[in-house]
Amino acid sequence: MGDVTCPTCGEPWEAYYLQHDLIWEVVDEPLARLWKTLKSEGKNPLKDPEFGPQFREGLEEDGWKLCGDSLLSFVTCSCCPEGAKPDKDKAAVRQELAYLLGDDEDGLQSMMEDFEI
Image (tube, rainbow, N blue to C red; front, side, top):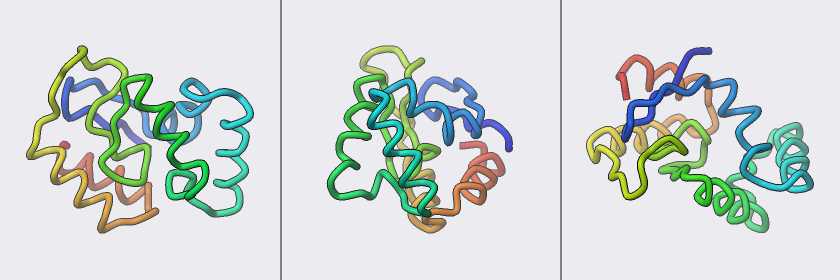
């Protein structure tokens, strides 16, 4: 796995970190454990009707804004300056890729790396 670059500030993020470690830093431990359980059951925690909004809220409080249902589909990150605006073109392509590839995070990461978005 490679890096996923923030389309707003250009900060590179390791895809593995985003998929496995980030959530432990932005939500409390019980919610992070629930994330891990849902992932182990083959579910996408961000799509969970009950807990998905809580995951997104924790991410947004830390500066992460998503344009899809994957942690890789972020348009702002915790390194972005306050009030920073995402590159609209890159965000649109990222959102479309996240939609088209669904839960294929490896494919999503690879395509974003190929398109440099």
